Image (cartoon, rainbow over the protein chains, first blue to last red):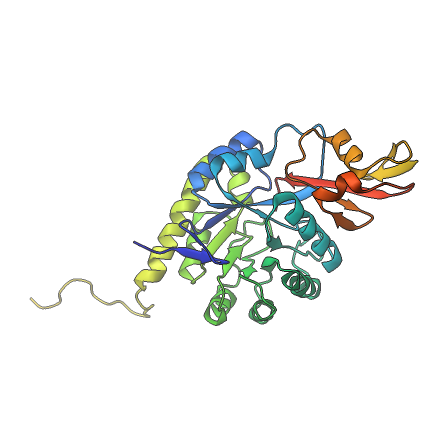
Length: 252
Length: 66
C-alpha cells in the first residue's frame, strides 16, 4: 500500500519516530533502531563530555536516519530558543523538536513558554515540531504560529500510561492541518496502535522501547503496531453497537 | 585570564581564541556547537573570536535524550 508520510515537505515510509532517552548503550540503540524501522530519531543537546565513549551521531549516520534535535530540559522560551540555535549549528538542520517543560516532576509542557518559543523559532526559519499538551486549543494555536506538526502527549513522559484522553487526541486530529504525532506516554504496542487508530499521522516514543526488558523486540512490536493502527484507520472500522449483530446468515 | 567553560574555570593565555577552548575539549568538532556569553558563535567564527577574562562559554553536542 502506498501511504507516504509527509513531514515538513519530506517524505518518509515509517510513521514511527524513535527517541533515544534511556537507552542503555549505543549498541542497544543500533539494534532497536534497526528493528523499529524508524527513519527519524530525536537527540538532546548537552555539554560536551570529553570522556564520553563514542558518539550517538555515528550510530545514527550509519543507520541513515534523520536527526531531529530536541530542546529537552529547557524550562523557558529563552532557553529553548538558544538550545535550538545551538542544535541548528551543531547538526546543520533547521528541524527542531521543541520541548519546554514546566517542572521536573510532571515534565508537562509549559503552554505559555512553548507557544512563545514556537513563534520565535518559526520567525527564525526553524521547522518546529512542538511537544505539547493534549489540548486541542493549544494545538491549534501552535499550528497558527507556523509549526510544521503538533505532537500532543498521550500521558506524561516515561509514564507508560498510554493515551489518557483519546477524545482530545481525536479533536486535535480532526482540526489539524499539519501532521499530528503522538509524543510521550506510550507504554506498549497497543498504545501505539491506538494512537494511529485515532488518526494520528505518527508516533514518537523512547522509554517504551529503551527501558523495555528487551528493547529490540519492543522496537519491532512498535513498528508493527504503528503499521497495524495506520492500516486499521485507513480501512475504516465498523461502528460500535450496543447489541449483537449476527455475522452468519440467519435464514435456514 | 580565566574563562568559564561548561561551568568550570579554565586558565588561558591572553589573546586566546574560542577555537583553542573547543579543541582542548575534543578532537572532533563534528556535531559540536558553541555559545559565548549566551549567543551562538558559528563554527566559521571560532578561530577569529578573541576571548576576554570572565567569558562564559558553553560547548554542546548531541547526546541520547528526549
